[in-house]
Length: 277
Image 1 (tube, rainbow, N blue to C red):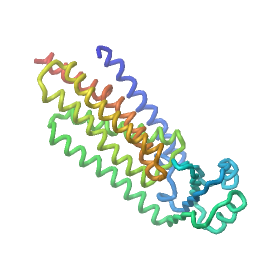
Image 2: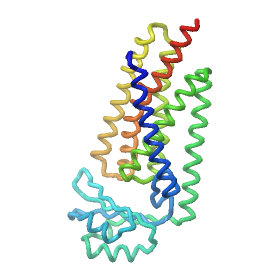
Image 3: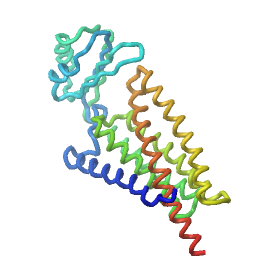
Image 4: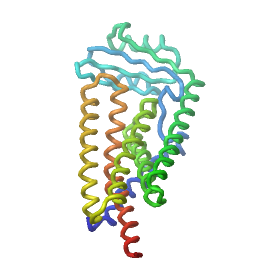
């Protein structure tokens, strides 16, 4: 606890590294991270089969596509191919020579480029509005600019770092991922409000209030992550798996940002106020 100023360099370093990754993405691809066909337009083909699938062979056959394999709890495999090519018959003909599958187990989603652009615009507006309304609520609750800014900064850092880590792992931005990022804002604000409320509105020693808030907050985070890990491991739905992995990454980052960075900022501010008095 006494080395909290030194510890604050950890979340700051993570944030700076994340900003470098995101900046590089923006300069190279024109976006914070790669977007899937829901946001750019194209085909998404999901094939469920019990056959063993050579994912590398399929990737070589579709070099410009995003190919991944999802394994369900029941043992079945789901091959997911996302491509900007709109000729689904051509893709299925190529796959016929690579794997065995029943056409009944094929799901095809098609998004026109214009629709994808609309989804992308709406998703960005949703994130901006979420932050705007979150900031209003925080200022109504605490009134003081320093703790309010610390909460907003921590939430923004959670989103930025989560996007950077997803980018490093080759994940793509999709509508389920956007939903998870919106949920992450709520999770982040919960722990930050808990910390700020304990420090500003409870009587007692500053260190004791931080420790008390930490015990409650870390319990909340661990139980949430346990549930999300279960969903990721045992759910056969790719959308649920996408949402859960994003939230697992985000909650892990939130532990660092809330209990090191935000707690450090609030402690510095409160100690300075006490010295002035």
